[in-house]
Image 1: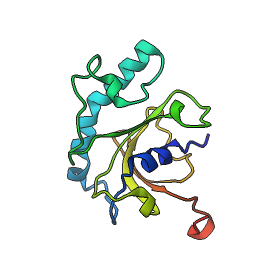
Image 2: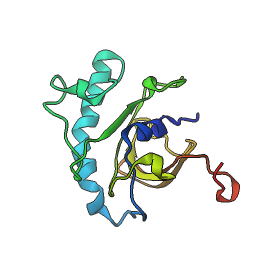
Image 3: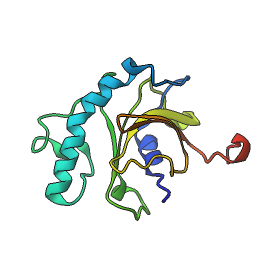
Image 4: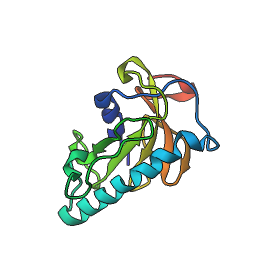
Length: 156
């Protein structure tokens, strides 16, 4: 199944990462944010259990499921996309939660964005427009490509 709704999230949120890759050894650059996101993931699970759908916006979790929305270690709100809110999406109920571990720039000005991405189904490798660098604690460090990358690295 090809899921590209993550790309929509970044076009809307206009968040992207700077140059350079993070490795699994750079835990200080991502682990605190992953831990801060734990209550959000738990609240999304509770919301789904109670209402049989995920919210359209994280703000719907407050105050019934969370007292307030936490921020990443970088002082930014976590990005969120409910797959059912994406035009032409026909898959299972799922969502993407993400944060950027580097300085932000407008996504439309960049050909790619590097972020940490969480999705409850854990399907990262079967998506178009995404390159997975590594997975840690169910989060994938990925590069989102604005355009499809073809053979030999050509942008299509």
